[in-house]
Image (cartoon, rainbow, N blue to C red; front, side, top):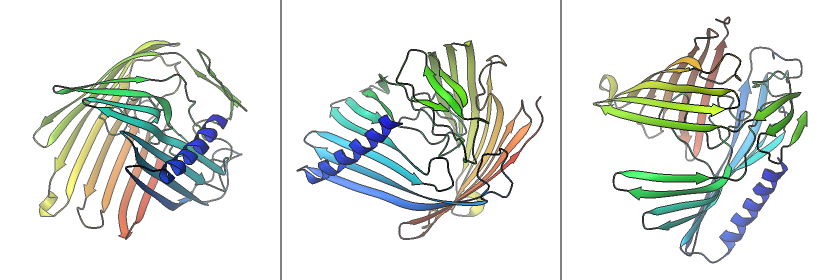
Length: 342
């Protein structure tokens, strides 16, 4: 973590210096916010925080600076959470130099990339590690140092991504209420080496893998058929993993101004039962999103994920609305319904 704390400091200094230097143009934007989490149930583990109402604050800084023919872009994130194991945390989500020459587009630095077409989970998406402290469902990613080069071809895009350093996944620990591990991590080891940090509990092993993947979508009227499939080979052998989904959109639903979008997805893989636990191994996901299309940007979303193996459910309600000016209110309700192992 010291490495990325240093990266955070360097990126901040680079942003400030670039803003103060002569440039063709620049833009800076950011946000500050407060988050309130309410836990009606007692914690499962003894060392987790027993505080039912937990308040934290966060901030982001985004900057884009033109320097000659190049462009520097950065996104910094920080959080202060008094009831968490790490009271102060942050990450350099992006900090890269961008060069564009004709049909070639290159990014060099800390990059955040998202691959895939499915809604609930993307099996093909393996470039950036996930920040399971910020979001235990894996929607928040950690910045990955590397080089990304893309070429626009006739009707297609060819991309190349290369990196010389691996990042460890960030797990909840100690007082954190959202934890996927019952004990802390003792150390994190990479098969081909890396400056692996020493922590304290489970041993996290990051094995070398080779992966071939494909994602595709096909539009039929107001319906999109989507699929992702991977074949991965690593320390535990080879397996297939993928998902198939359908997305249907109803414009001006029921004669109103809003749009209703329905999702249905199924996931399955062939990895052995002894393999490490992975989300969406045998799961079904359904969801509905209603965009009111009003001046407040009101959005309502219902989601339900059912684990076929463990017979458990995750029910979610999400809502978002702009109150006034640049103030945004977001609500997120989670209910985990546990079952028995199949």
